[in-house]
Length: 288
Image (cartoon, rainbow, N blue to C red; front, side, top):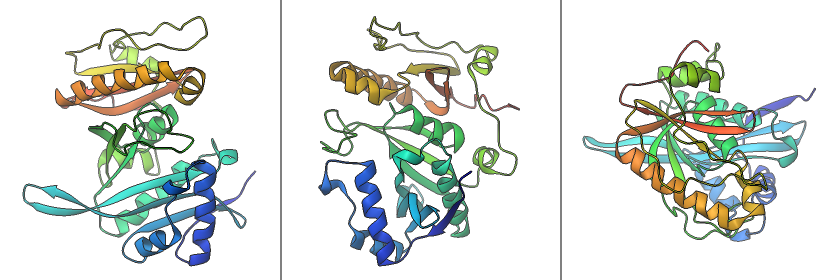
C-alpha cells in the first residue's frame, strides 16, 4: 500500500521538482516546459499548484491560474486549469483524480463556480477522467489550438483540443466528487437506454481501428461515438492512421457541437472507448 499526501506548492525549491516532472511527462521539448519563475508568479497572484507526494517524492501535480469568461452581461472570473501531470510509474493509482478533487475543493473555497482546461479528445484515459469521473462537459472543439508541438506526446499531429467546462457547484459534479459518487457508466447502461453507437469500426488485420469513411450523423437525443482505446499506441504504429482519426474526429465533433450536442459522458471498458453526446436536456444520469 502506498501512502500519498497532497499539499499546496508555493516555494522556489518546490518548483524544481515540478520542472523535472514536466520533463518526465512531456519529454523532448524544453521550450514547452513552464519555467519556475512563471509558476511562482502565478501561484502568488491567485494561481494554484497542488502536488501529490509519496514521502518526499513529487508523484504528480495540477497547475492553474485565474482567467475570465466574457459573458453578455460582463466578464466573470474563472479558473484556467493548465497542466495535470502524474509520473509514468504512478499512473492508474488514482492520483490524477485525487489532485483534481483537491483542486475542486480549493476553487470552491475561492468562491469560483467555473473552471476550464483543454485535452486531446483522442486520449481515452484523459477523456474518462475529465468527462466521466470529474463531470466536466464539452461543446467546444479547438483545431490546432497550440500550433505545431514538438514534445514526445504531441509531435507529428495537429494539436486539436477539447475545451471542457467544469461547473464546480453543479449537481453533476457533486455526484461525481461528493461523498457518494455516481457509479461507472457501462456499455450495458448505454444499450438499456436504447442508444446504439453511430458506427462500429472494424479492426484491421493488425488490430488497429480505422475511422469510418463517411462522417456519421444522428438526430437522436443521446448518441455515442467510438474512438481508439489507445491512441498513443495507434499513433506509434501508424502515423497516417492517427492523422486520419484526427481529421475524422475534428469534422465529427465540430458538426455535432454546432448542431447542439454536448459531450457529457465517456465509457472506457473491455478495450473499447465511447464518447456519449447529449442533445438538449437529454442525459444518461442515473443510479449506476
